[in-house]
Picture 1 (cartoon, rainbow, N blue to C red):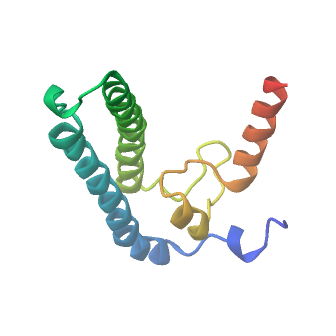
Picture 2: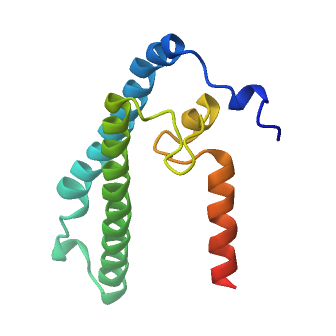
Length: 135
């Protein structure tokens, strides 16, 4: 892609300022959804009544499901940390800019992945490095 393609052109400061409330809302809604999931895990997934599990297979299945729920909540906790960092960058005026090269990230990319900190070029470069190390 050409650097001067429309998705790489940064809007004016006024246009970006007008986008701040929209992205703040997106981030807060995602955080609220994750917190609701965590609350549900605490109230529903944590309660295993041994009387409801008549055999070892049922107990093993319930244990596995609970373990899976905890792993998912752990991942969600990490995502909440990313959301909080994104909200901080939004307030500091750094949200729309790549933390690696300083280029405009792009509104479409931020809509797709609101917690991203890298423009598409830097993200692709990072993924190539990761694949090279994995080989």
